[in-house]
Amino acid sequence: MRVLIVGGGGREHAIAASVVKSKKCDKLFCAPGNAGIAALAECVPIGVMEFDKLKEFAVKENIDFVIVAPDDPLAAGLVDVFEEAGIKAFGPRKNAAILEGSKAFSKDLMKKYDIPTAEYENFDDAAAALEYLKNVQYPIVLKADGLALGKGVLICMNADEAVAGVKEIMEDKKFGNAGNRMVIEQFMTGREVSVLTFTDGRTIRVMASAQDHKRAKDNDEGLNTGGMGTFSPSPFYTDEVHDFCMKNIYQPTVDAMAKEGRTFKGVIFFGLMLTPQGPKVLEYNARFGDPEAQVVLPRMENDLLEVMEACVDGTLDKIELSFKKDAAVCVVLASDGYPLSYEKGKVISGLDKFDGKEDYFCFHAGTKFSDDKKVLTNGGRVLGITALGSDLKEARRKAYEATEWVVFDNKYLRHDIGKAIDDV
Ligand code: GLY
Image 1 (tube, helix red, strand yellow):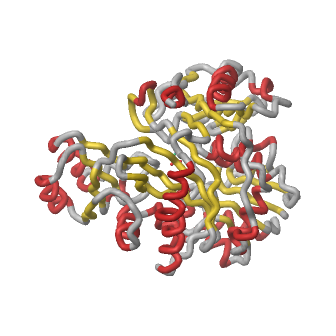
Image 2 (cartoon, protein in one colour):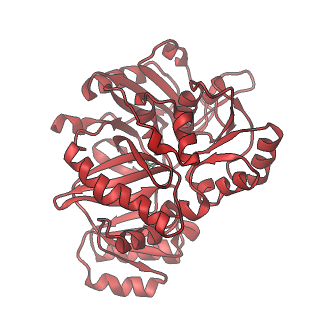
């Protein structure tokens, strides 16, 4: 098959690294890709929201299968565009990607179908939200309804913070139109776990659990980021938790979407909180997580393209997933200053140290080539350094060892990715 991946970050590099190994993949393209993906795929300079150009390219190049990886094009209906052009596309259609695209929709869905989540109310205007805040317990969680680069969630410790938060989201439009509506929900305590799953709209298959580290600085301090590192599996995701979630969360979500006439095909990423009352849904994402994909996919033994095709074709019940026993840890190398302001264009050296090493992966997130073919930093998150190990501790030791191999000015990383493992 001739395959096109839409996206250009660490998640897409991890997807490309798996797809290129598929016996079904004859030729791989990526739009727009990055300097790392360019070693595996032909990168084409088309942005992920340039739907007309993407469709034109796919038709001209006789693409058989498209993988739409990022949230924005999924929410805006890129899968529908390819399907209308007669091209198979992996990912939810627009009417199903709303599961991530609207927090208010997903909360109402969970309430209607009795899927465990925090108590909440949705608001269309700031005055009603401010009135509601007079009778809540703190801390409280404010969520902009729409997509906000993972930054539209505010945890407010007191009424002053919450009032300021409502104004930021709904009046100052800090997150743009994502803040036209908002959710106010009860704060939940417990361990956070991410679980990636495939679904064909009927059958759901669980890939693996992982844990992200969202804050920029060690000890979960600093600003929220897209994710500074991950590990997989999570030792807190026990068989008992899995069985509960399968029965009360995963399958009910897939069935609920189908009943609503919004059949979901693709990846559902369940953001869970393991509360004292049992697992509850924090949020849904309609795609692979980034950097979660960078620890889950290197552990997967299946032919990724075959699984994705089964999701589109509705034959996922014929497939069982299989994962290496090895654990994986990913440490993100960022540009100092991320997620606010940072410099780009720094030369990266040491990338060749990963050549020929099966247990180590260097996924490119924000990189590009200079005119003379040097690899340069080109984003806040620059690289995801992943290592496999016989257990989480060994994987962590190896991942941190490999972070030393790569050198660039303003390199920044957290030093405590996977530290929670020590509590087990
Ligand atoms: N790492 C969180 C996300 O992909 O949304």
